[in-house]
Length: 155
Image (cartoon, rainbow, N blue to C red; front, side):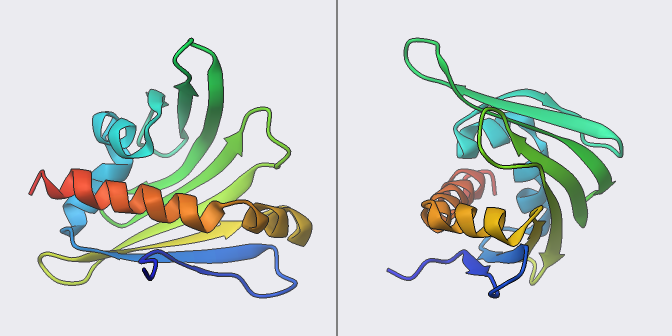
């Protein structure tokens, strides 16, 4: 099956672009990234902090059945324009990746559809390429599929 979330990565660059068309109105797609209760459902993480404002921050965490933390991510929000744009850093704790810069742009396509474009900038070409060697494309497609399914029920 063809993946709906597309990743475009040119050789010898330290960035990539992720695009996805959603069968969701723009406002619901944006809520999926800004409402802690919804973020927790589709990302399958606990939201410890989510300050949706300029100079705000966020912190996500996932624990296994025994309570051991298996994933932590955090960042700072640099720009926040409701239903249009989020610019933020993203850093995974205890991972071999440096902080990355993410530009998330939300676009209304029709009354019932929208598009997310993410431009992600890495510190180096090597770090970007290392990320792409992980099951990155599979993971983001799975997460976006879950986002569309969960948020679609809110229509």
